[in-house]
Length: 318
Length: 248
Image 1 (spheres, rainbow over the protein chains, first blue to last red):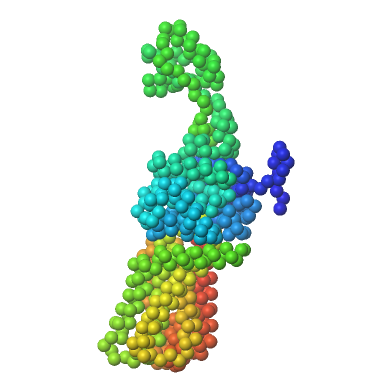
Image 2 (cartoon, chains in turn yellow, brown):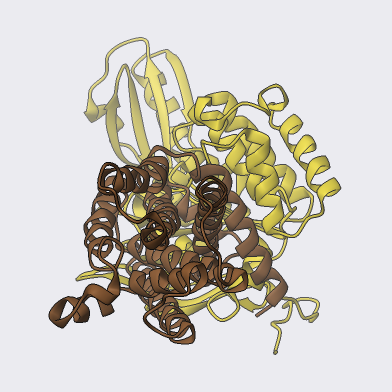
């Protein structure tokens, strides 16, 4: 097997997840069209896209749940379609459309999942105790999962996914619909697993979550990847859409903002949003206009480019 | 493929099925109560020779018990949304099919063994060949557990649809398998129809093991059941693989 090499050091490495030219159609609809991603070990990779963009279909192919029409997926060098058992042993998965057994208790769910990974009895028990404590479920360990809230079920789901300390953790919309406490626990657990060495691939349509968690993000739209970069690089791609938000002590009209450096201005509640390519020039122009018309600034703030803007621009037309 | 991981996946799936599905309402109703009620309906008050008809009753019991667990598992898991999580664990399609089959077969063997031991003790039934009886138990339970797994394979997340389909297929089989009319008394098209049911060969094996009055040689009954097992498993695999391709 020929391994890729690190560009700077020249040392060979193995991708944690490598998907090549994945394609999947359902009848006339192409859900995933020629998607390729390569995720190096150790990072948190985000798959961001609007609803129906193809995120879940791509993840289902990467986890061996759905057989692709074309393309291949390797998990730490193992082809998931040729050797699914070996590939799946290296993964922990939270499927979007999957939950734990409601007829088993919290602990039974974790223990039976651990058995699939060949963990011995003592190790299973110790790990279950550790995870239940970490996820705040020790007191409910013997309760049937059917009595749990959605957030608690999702915590058990993540417990099952991490019970064997997988080198690769794949989570499909892990925080959707969760209360703040459960959401925070899930995010903390993802971070913790990453710090312990797991490579994480997660899908989300929560832009702030992706921004806060991920080292690299792929934006998928209509079944195709439209951009892959770090959150900061993606933001800078759309640096031109920066603005200054300003409020004066008196009402002003749009004509006031005809000044060098200001491309357009929009009324924004009791403020004005002034769009500019050069915030420095725009702020100076606004100061001189305020001086000229004897206006007092109530507030003034410049925006940084946001991932949301990058997302909206890249998925425009949805 | 790592055979240890494969074997482990089958055993864990079997254990999971035994814990969750053995005491579900449809399994108790269709696997335990149904054959008992049918037996009582046909035999009580009719002054029938119990020794002659007991192999048929035992066959019916094993048929219903072994085939009652399988149809429930996959539709139930799809409805509860646990199926996708199961598929993402270190399992393959064959692990799921064999794990479901084993859960049904163990259920069938356990219940039918209890029924046989109690009945044999109370009614002083004959036993010509204990080894053949044991083989019949295993072959019969695996055959009809495989039927249950095949019945569960069509796409649905509604267990009642599959239980209905299952009854639609299982009930007619009971009537054309030499349970209520001994095979020796059949002829013409009835004989042909009876020969098409796999249950016929299990009942015939029980006749050979208990009374020594089988119509076919036991090796032939066993071969037919083995062939039927392979066909049922192959059918389940083809349908479930198609479901995975379609994403349903």
